[in-house]
Length: 134
Image 1 (spheres, rainbow, N blue to C red):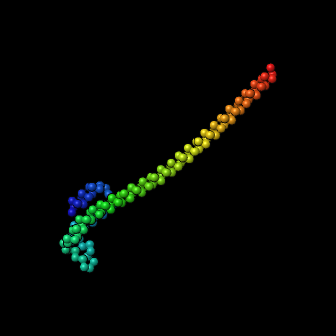
Image 2 (cartoon, one colour):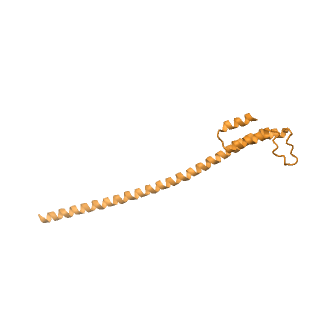
Image 3 (cartoon, helix red, strand yellow):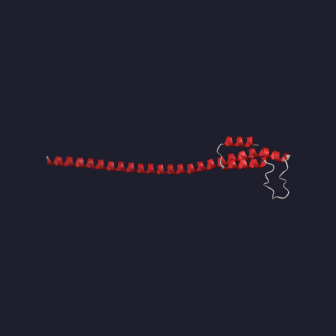
């Protein structure tokens, strides 16, 4: 029984409370005289495990592994959803900045056009005035 729990802990590494809970759970099954259910009527704490209990225990680690993987996947999904929302916010900010820069560019180009138009008009007026003065 301890090899199962040790291999489980070494496989999942630092799995935290879940691994500790599984270790305690496996310990309760391994010990026949734990007395955990003494207060419960009809439960014989000193009996050996039945064939059905052994079959359930054989299937329990697999289901527990699946549940643990499911929880880990759910945590990863939550983290990825949070990261996705954060990145969507950053993308929206960048889009806003691009729109602002584009509008500034158009404003600057319009101002440059106005200045160049004013410069050409002033040049023509200067040339006309210069011709009249000669």
